[in-house]
Image (tube, rainbow, N blue to C red; front, side, top):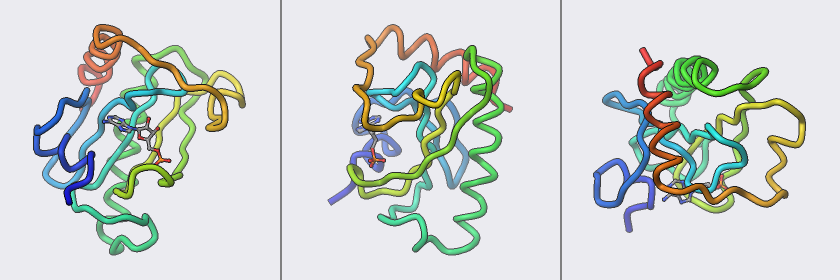
Length: 131
Ligand code: AMP
């Protein structure tokens, strides 16, 4: 069965997409830790990041770097934190989290539940700054 992220990639369900190329896609986490929390995903569906082949693994990180630069320009933060968890969705993804404090990347804290309009606004800003 296709993962929820493959469904976003295939436009079968909505996603707040901020960047995309032939092999990778980045979209907002629907329940972000902080505003501007983005997931970067290889289109090829693999469960575990360390099972990716080297080309996809390195390409994912290079794509994430470009997305992080766009987030930096769009959201008030000191820098972008990076995490890989993967306990909920079995399709590789890198979390990019704008940081102002250590607690901003605490995955045990309660997550936000922004409105569609709030997500659309931040997605549009990141998309505009992606190049
Ligand atoms: P994890 O697999 O533990 O790294 O967490 C998966 C992340 O995906 C969580 O932060 C969820 O909020 C996020 N998530 C789950 N479903 C969606 C969705 N449909 N669109 C965007 N983000 C999602």
